[in-house]
Amino acid sequence: MKVLVLTASTGGGHDMRARAFQAWTRREADLQLEAQLHRPMESCHGLYRFGVWLYNSIQRYAPRLHNIYFNYLEAAGMFRSAGRLLGAERFRRTLEETKPDILLSVHGALNHGFFEYARNVLGRDRVRCISWCDELHGGYGFSRHWVNPQADLFIGAVPETCETAVRMGMPATRTRVGGFLVRPDFYGPPLAIETRRDLIRDQLGFDPDQFILLLCASSRGAHNHLTFLELLKRGRVPAQVIVLPGKSEEARRSVESWLRGNPHQLVRLQPHRTDVSLWMRCASALVARPGTGTTHEAILSGCPLLLNCLGGVMPQERITVEYCREHGLGETIRRPQDLLRWVKRWSEHPDELLAIRQRMRQVRPPVMPREILKAVKGGA
Image (cartoon, rainbow, N blue to C red):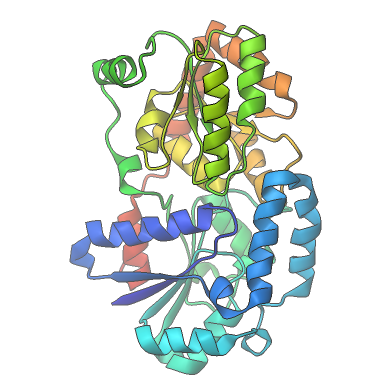
């Protein structure tokens, strides 16, 4: 069965989950699903491409302003019906070329007009339309566009996701908890203690008995790496630091420049194409924007979270912060000095990190992504 996965590059999480779904179809080949990724917003019309660029710019430079962007899209509903889509003929060509049996949307804006249009082109009974929603909590920030009561199925990451969808009108009989959709390597077995120690010593040159902080940028380059690195240096905090720049060349070059000026700091910059799951299992704690994808990965890896909220919080990030607060999965950084405070505290009180890891094990979904694939295909 052919699955056309609808995604968009607003942030990096949607594309990450689309690629993860594709990776799982290859891994679970017996289910006979073939996945192809498509970004209808970027390919249909220049106005949509501008919207994607604007989203990513706001995320990088002024997250607080995203409240305006979010509320405008919630009210405008420009993707709510097939008749309102711009450049829809380009989407038609994709549908006619791929002839998908299933449309799987992993983006909040693609669950209405594009579903309706695909049914008009292919025939209502010839294509299943399914939403997979990664959000972790209801409330402000959970877009109404995620929920289309006419869709064949709504799959939510956690029970809170599905409860929210039902409250917003999705029939409970067509709602299912599916767990996290991340790359297969995040579902690998835990690292043995000696394996972890050897990796830290041999590949990083770090002391495995000392605190290790992992700084993550979003794939689109949202980060505060230099602010945090300078703060750790001036504060004389005994933290060893792994830096992930994401896909951003600007982020990579800026950290490389900083390292040339600070060669004695215990900081290791990793390339974009690195085993993130491995470093999450090695780290004592992770600093990242409160995106759902990174949060899913951290929970599966058992890596306590320091949620980077500098510059304000986007609406979608707000509900992730709320989920982590309710379940005790980490702490927030609202001022740069908060990082120093938590690194010092957790270095001196490792029992608090152990408690967070235990809570992460408790909220880790009991199902594997194979169950998402079976639900998409129409199995039990």
